[in-house]
View 1 (cartoon, rainbow, N blue to C red):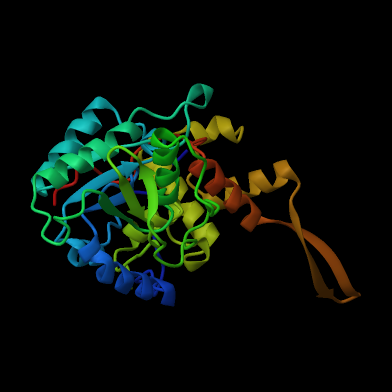
View 2: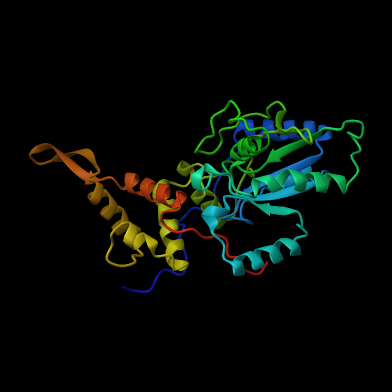
Length: 324
């Protein structure tokens, strides 16, 4: 086959556009109003994109409080030891010294990952290193959990509750699509000793994302709704990324003969394999004819689902070795 693309063509699209629904602005205002009640801010982000999409609005609004960065879904990123070393140096260079890698989904036998048990002690340590100006007389600890949509904030709360309180999930379903939590919730008790409560918050993105590569990576990780860029375009960016990173697991997963750089061929193959078609009425010289065409949108959605499930490879999307 010919050489892979070295650049992705976005066409006439220059920005991701506007993705700041009304509930996001309201949520940000509520966070600021609650800040005086909070001892620590826990920012959750997807480990596959440790730098892309971390919202500067949140950092600016909540910078006055102690801060723990939680890079969640580390199991879907599967960083090597070399990747971890580079990532930790990058974080240190950005003066981010309090961070932790977590996996909220239960492992073998349904056991919680050990990383969950480290979150509360790390937060307590961070809080004890600073003065609690607003809450010196209160022995309990209040924390606020923030981040962009669909990075696992609610799953993290549920995991901590299972760890420390042996309770099930909070009474709200954990969504698979972004933009599910719509308002700051009441305090949720997550630990008894010490007594810790967490405020859940809606995922908040920047009002406009100018870097389309960043926007695409956010979309691949399901933090931006697919329709904003188009499922087929995101699937094409996924194929471009897989080939650039030499992650060729998709070849065997879809029973292809070799790596392919043309998304139309991959989508056609999946549609024909699954016998998925769209019915169209076509006007011909002999009258209307009903024709079946391969359902490319179905195929693109399958590719995104398989990537998000880790079936097409587990790796970090951000280029850790890029100079900043």
